[in-house]
Image 1 (cartoon, rainbow, N blue to C red):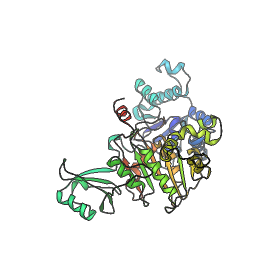
Image 2: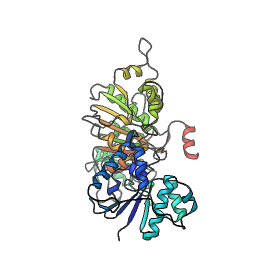
Image 3: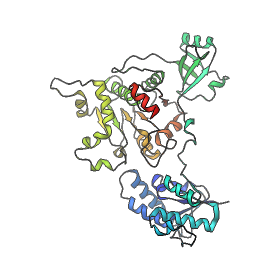
Image 4: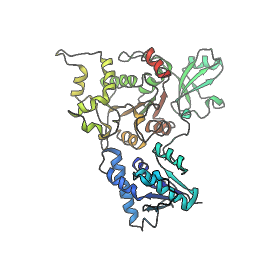
Length: 441
């Protein structure tokens, strides 16, 4: 049976292709949604771009027939734009007396249900609107296109544990590598660049390796890089990925204080300042929330406007350089920025660029949508490495959650590819107080 999906404005602003995401069913857009799109089309960043793209799609569909009667979509479904539906006496007074756009959309969905029954579902990314729907008995759901799993505990961590014989543990220490045990259940479905912690018993010493092309290679020991040395096995895993030239995309996920940003910055500084590696520039950025908006209203130059957003990265740079100054008393970090070796860039302005021979760090990437992340990764030119860091439990973007944000999406979509690696960091290293706070507060 054909289903009817009524789309809220925020769905179209989140994904301009959502018109075509409901297979051979009927998609309905209330007329008030077009008014909201029109108000957003001049908005900077992805929101404005999606509003304009939806308008273009609708204009093209308009040429095929009447949108009020219904136009066939390329996926076999039908699109209709509805005028404000007639209000019935059964409509809750709260919706009749309050002319807010959300309430108009709710009342239209309510009337559609009176006509077509429970076959109608309102699709919205607004949590409060979904709560209102529950109160009013209106079938409602989130837009799930970019949701990688329904359970965040199933998100890929980049590490697995395997129980093997002590002979195998001793053998990998001797040979430095071993073939994947294909018949062993603990190795089933192992991913490229996935780490394996192998033990014979829970109390025995472990052999730790990384999988690549059917082999497990013993993990090397790492010394200090710019004064930063791995303090736990997850940080060792991160360093192994950060310093592997064959891996072009590294994703580091973990709570505050686990060292994600510091490890990435230390690796980036090393890659850029060691001339024989071939990276010419360290580019750092963080999402501005709300993206593309606040930066324009802050006073000062571009660098001064970006300073509040990039301060955590600059703090890590300051830690690495330990306030080093040249003979004139100028900080070395300032000199590297002046020479263009270090660069701060707003994500809003990455669109259209092609960045080659660079080490790119995107901090707080959990606040990116899938489309924003695609924009960033597709900017990578030859000899460029991208590191995404973030905590999926701390999301400020109202359109995404822990299983639909750009960082989680990248982790899941790249896990089967040799040029990408991921690790979830667990143990806090910032301080005893910070670690305890992240656990109990």
